[in-house]
Image (cartoon, rainbow, N blue to C red; front, side):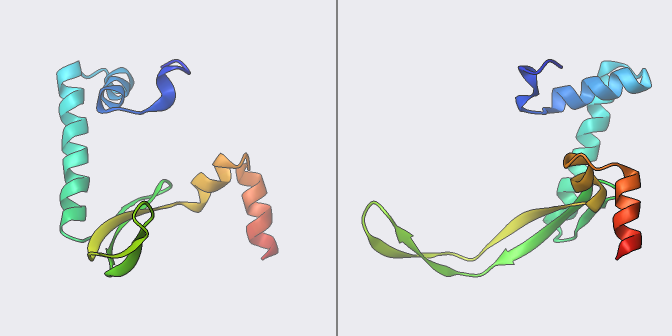
Length: 112
């Protein structure tokens, strides 16, 4: 994947990566990706969290009804209650994103 293609990670990109990493045929790799994403989706639809160790946790939250504002019309509107999915990244992922090494994380955790 080049920098120009890196704007979105698609199912096709995931299937290609599985295909290359495992040597599976492309159709099997695509099936694996679909099964994995379906499993995550089904779990979230049941209202259960999904935790991927070292990556993060997807949590289903219930958002209460609230008063919002239509900026164009300048009127108040009620926003209906809804369900939302929130992602909380694992501390190691955040540290890696910020350029910290595992040695840096060990120093911080031992100092605390």
